[in-house]
Picture 1 (cartoon, rainbow, N blue to C red):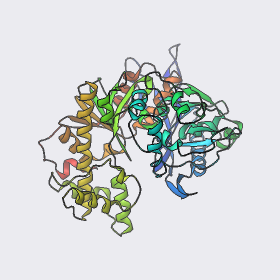
Picture 2 (picture 1 turned 90 degrees about the vertical axis):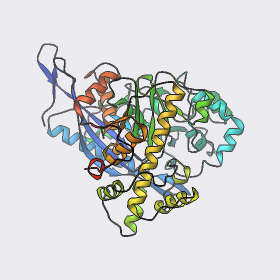
Picture 3 (picture 1 turned 180 degrees about the vertical axis):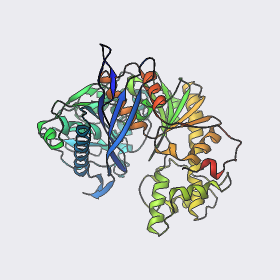
Picture 4 (picture 1 turned 135 degrees about the vertical axis):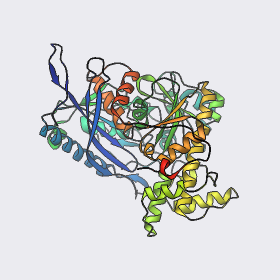
Length: 505
């Protein structure tokens, strides 16, 4: 594929820019080449993605807890960047910059010499549970929320940090910032991910240093903040040599919290939308200009996280397709090897109104026999769920859709906004049964796609920083609409979901 032409100031063309997106989730990661061409003669432009490297990710039992094998993870990042460099070179392209996004809240501790002192703990480890009460003795939950606007989750960064000892001389680098540091030697904390720590002032957009002091944490535990679109630095010589990239290649801060990048690529045409970033977790909410820090919002456990361009992602975690993927893993171990399409076909054939669970209950966080956990949760409600994989799949998807509907209705009420359309992005947008159940549960039209919203948001922020595209989120989202396939699901008559209309292709 040749380089994409873009308009030159003299009426000719210049080579279009190519960007590398490092996109890592809790179960897998990718390195992706993104090519972006601006609109010509009033057009909306086009963004394309090419995955050049995929790799698994997951927690491991190590040193007394559930941890990320970060050394292996970073080695895969370097392998992916080397692959990106080769592919670009074969096509006569030059990679302009690299952007990194991952999950939130987890961190690695780095000493003054830049050494990672231990493999980072995973948020799925249970170590922070006991720290919650100790933190709340020092910082009243109402005060915490009034400053940070952050949803209470037992694995939030501040609770994890409260379990640490001997932090003097160390810095905490959130996972994408840790990767950026090892690439560039520069220590920064990107703001969208900083906003998930419980130590970030939602109004001021700065560290809440008084909370660090109250918890006995070093004032400079985290590096200075950086905003999406700003340059972290250029590649270290050793990294450039290992990957084949030029030392001048920039690492650009993007929405390093993967949900921030995903929401930046929601293809909304107006402001009256809700979004569901559907993957391992479901992040369900609306986009606002200011945080909602009311007591009612705290009681509803909504979070106010930073988005690209200083927006507020007002949302709540509602569990996710982790439930289904863990069930598939358990069934495979038992010798049941039905495909996802088979499971969805069987689930779609079942009637609406079966038993449901609270999909975001902490009971489902840790990996274990998920089918039996779900059946036990149903029994606790006084209902019965068979051990049929189709029935369990149906229970999961109806429970998620019901949770989405409740959360969107709560967001409308608490933020005093109106939602006309629901955008589902990420891997869950391919699950047509889930999309249709969500449309029916919410009574609102659902637009599904793009699947690769996170990578698109990552690439588009880089492209704007490079001057390839311009404008605000509206312009970036118009480019997404013009580039990506989308599917609409009108709210059907409740209960009318056919196999043909709802099963993923």
